[in-house]
Length: 317
Ligand code: SD4
Image 1 (cartoon, rainbow, N blue to C red):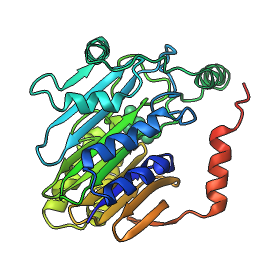
Image 2 (spheres, rainbow, N blue to C red; image 1 turned 90 degrees about the horizontal axis):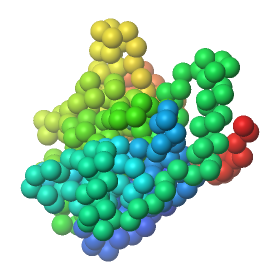
Image 3 (tube, rainbow, N blue to C red; image 1 turned 90 degrees about the vertical axis):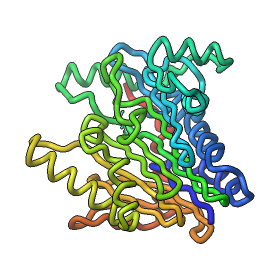
Image 4 (cartoon, helix red, strand yellow; image 1 turned 120 degrees about the vertical axis):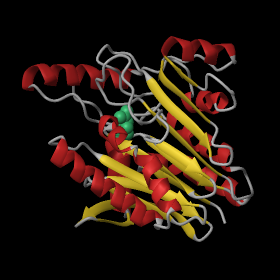
């Protein structure tokens, strides 16, 4: 058995290549890192890697993580500036016995010392979004904190190993130095090859309150199916946040167990995910929650075309 599942449509091309590689016997670790790196490299995805949207200071600060479900080794970077592939730095850090989570200047210095390439990650298109948002916020008092899609990818290989990786530019207009859930183990990602893995996307400040990914893996270990674990964790966290905190941000997750069974849950209308396994051909699904349960169906051609047009549409400043 092999399998791969990822948050959001944007992971499709990377997942497609890694699904082929997994089917041919490639290890899960390399498969998820390569798939995430493909998303980081694509300039039109404005919430991950090159082309990611900046902080309120107009700088692109990137977060990424990697976890090996065999050894539980993990590495993460936060607020990394101008390094081409944060996920590859996180993967390299996961091999360090100590200092496997690095942020800011220290993360950048370490990456450069290891030969990772420097690259200016702020694009003109991202700056157009930034200028537009600055103006709208001044004019209409909009909340700047939206426009976020973290990529999180779980892989299961033919040798029963699992890995997970995440990458994001975090929330648009975030404060310099702000970290979300994506580089935080247990919140944005968790992976244990004996059970399964989970990864999250949405408002990091809220996802972290539920240690969301760890909790999903824990419930799978106790016997829940991936879908039950995903739905119950997202619903309970949302209810808890509403009753105790008064509001709940976007919460979306995907997960997979060691048998390649998968689940997805969301509290928003437009969550998409991509999955392929030995028994499930590569598919983009669109998930929606109806009464405590997430339902999903394959997207159609029209949806795919609208997506392709939207991500490349000119930005009216
Ligand atoms: C964060 N969770 O930095 C990330 C953003 C995200 O979909 O996933 N957006 O809080």
